[in-house]
Image (cartoon, rainbow, N blue to C red):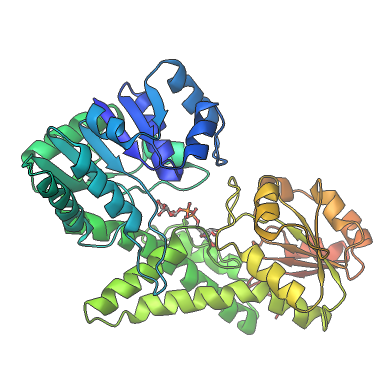
Length: 442
Ligand code: UGA
C-alpha cells in the first residue's frame, strides 16, 4: 500500500519505518527541513534502540522516503497517517494546531479518495474536527471528494517502540465504515498473523481508549507511590508489598514500581488533558486530579529526602545518576531529575550528573552553568560528591561496589529514587540508604 506519515517524532518515525519494513511504500513527511535533512543523511534525531538500523535498511530498499513536500506526501499515498505532536495548551488541554494544519493541507492537495488516520494522541471528537478541516479546504477549492477519517491510537513506549509497534497487544481502530475496516486490515495484515489483534470500535471510543490506557497506568504508579509513602510511615518495606500484591493476576506486576514519579511526554500530558476534557463535559474527575497531585508531590521527594537526611544541602555537591525520564531513552521531558536539579540549584548546591544517553539533551536544556558538571561516566560523577541520588534505573547502575561508594561519598548517603539495591547490602557497606517506601527510612 502507499502510505504517508505526517510527523517524524517518535510515533511517526517508528510507525513509518515499521510499515515500510513489512513491504508498504512509505513517505515520512515533516515541515522541519533540518530534521528531514538529518534523516536523509541516515541520522536519527532521537535515541530509540534499533531505529537507526531499521530506517537505514528500509531507505536502502527504497520503501522508506523522506520529504518536506506536503503536496507530494498527500498526492502519492492513499493512506495518510497524522502523527504530529499534540503538546499541552496553557490550560492543559491538547493543542490540536498541528493536527488540524495537516488536515487542512490534505484538503488543499488531495485529488482523489484518501483515508486519513489519526495516530496522534487526540481528545475525543478530534476525528470530527479533522474531517471538517479537510471539508473546508476542499470547499475552498470547489471540490467534493470522498475522504474517510479514522482513529488509530498508538500504544508504543519509548525505548521499546519497535517491539511495541510490531508485537503490541492490540491494534485499535475507531471507524464505522466497512471500507475503512478492510483497508486498515490490509495495512496491518503483516502484524496481525497469529491471532487477531485488530479491535474495531467507534471513533470516539478509540480516542478515549488511548487516554484511558495511559491514565490507568499512571493511576497504578501514583497508587503505588502513595502506598510507598504510607509504608515509610508504617515501617514497612513497600517492595515486599509490591511483590505481595503483584502476585495476584488481577493486579499484576506491571507498572506497580514505586519511584520518584512518572515523567515523559505522555503520562503527565495525557492525564492532564483527560482531566481537562472531563471538566469541559461537566464532570469532576476526582481520581485523575489525585493521580496528578500524588505525582507532583512524588517528584519533590528526592530533594525532600536529601534535605531531611543532610539537614542542609547548601554548598553540597550532589552526584546524580540518570537524567532521562526512564532508561533506554535520551528524553528528559518531565523527568524527575529536572525537578531535583532545579531544586538543588535554587538552594545553591552543585550537581555532578551522568546519564548513558541523555547528556547532550541535558546540555541542550541547561547549557553551561557553573553548578552543573556533566561527567564522562558514573564513577566520575561520584568523585568529590557528598551524596548520590539515583533518578533513572539504567541497567549500568545496578551493579556497584558499595564499599567503594561509601569510601567516596563524604556523607555516605545514597537516595535511590528507583529502589535498585538491597537495604541490607547498603547498610553493611556503611552507607545511609534512602529508597522509596523502604522500611529503614523516613
Ligand atoms: C507510555 C505508555 O506506557 C505507552 O503505552 C504509551 O503509548 C506512551 O506512554 C504514549 O502515550 O505515547 P512512555 O511514556 O514511553 O509510554 O513510558 P513508560 O514506560 O510508560 O513510563 C512512563 C513513566 O512511568 C516513566 O517515568 C517511568 O519511570 C514511570 N514508571 C513506570 C514508574 O514510575 N513505575 C512503573 O511501575 C512504571
